Length: 353
Image 1 (cartoon, rainbow, N blue to C red):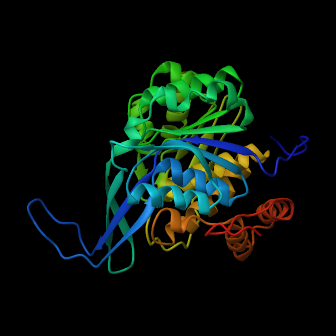
Image 2: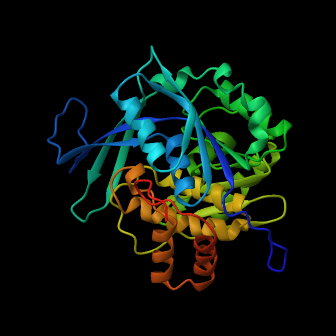
């Protein structure tokens, strides 16, 4: 939406997330072990996560009315995963408790350098996430048009993503697919997507285009080519996250890049991509134009990497406004303050303000 267009804001859009729950088991260390080697860790903690749940909570913390569909195990982790969503304002009445499969866990290894920079390695054991059945989401065939957007990821069975996208497409409901972790995606599913959001490596797997980079800079021609190939596959809008290089957005009418926020000290990158996608989806559903949505979502992602754990680090709208105010971006601040003035906000821990 360009400047001068009539903008109709929807301050509390309804977002549906069909996706995963994962309990992250986080170990920090000064270096990753080599094959056959044992190293001593510096710390351990657990944190609720999962791409689906992370994106749902982030959207909820930004004022969206968010619902989650998925599966957890009949165990302590499953109870905590549901509780984490509900206390942050996510509706979970269609989350199934699996009596056979355990809740999914993620083994998160964080290497913390002497200068404070971090890198992560993550192994996810899918558990109940991969036991979601078509029957679990059958109700969406008649109810999906209650929502303003559907968010999908690839930590659940592909047939579930296919079916959810089919239901949404039939009712004209926009669909966002965060194509992570990397996997093959059918042309039929791609043709039903309003948005797709891979990172640069997932985009390369989908398109065959390697996005070359030199430090924090990426080759613009490579990024354009990757975007164009995804558009040719049938997706309406492409949003590629590029880490320290920022993010790129393109469709048949526009292409732009937004640089990453400078001067951010990363503490834990876990969940940063999820916070960005959840934020962008919420902002676009509110009626905010795509470039502004990407710019504000960069602030959301920056705040997420600045704290430990996936869901504990997901920022509220007030925190986003505070950082934008600190950086002096008045145009973006006016948008966020408008949201704060018109919607009930959900802070960390689920307290409304």
